[in-house]
Image (cartoon, rainbow, N blue to C red; front, top):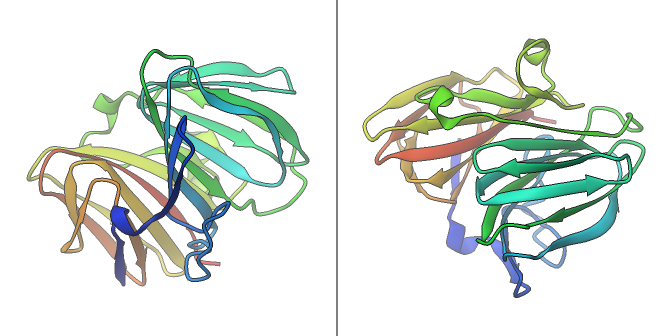
Length: 236
């Protein structure tokens, strides 16, 4: 089953400094039909104006993965962590028992991010934060695991999360195809950051959501040069 969720149909809000689109119900956007996908709970497509950002605020019991598409985001938290994550790279915050953090765009240009929230497998984990560079050149025509908590992700370069899930990314040139197996009991949600693709023959364009389940294999064919991000997770 492949369901396309066109970008134009997503919920959203324009706060001036922040333009946000929501793939799933979030904040003032309510949609009982879009409350998550497997362990994936939130996928926000955010544009943050220069010099603006999210003031300090708390989180608990959530794995929050930020994929920076353009610009950079600067993180600070009450555990003493601080770092700048630039375009193409990833940061992970495990909220666990509780963390207070801020995120600002300190760049002279608009920063564009995907912020992805995944429900942890257990509550009350130790909170933490980490970031890592993942050069786009290292993921051409293959899905690189950026953050993961599946058994096969242990000991890899992926940032760890406390969930049976993985955040993956790839770049494809027009005409290239990659394939990814999807085991029984697993689902996936894919968003092209740029370009256009066909997922098992179903067309999707930049920033559309592609909800996938009951497919033994995912074939992603680039209709034009594309950069894509995908979450694979347990179905329940």
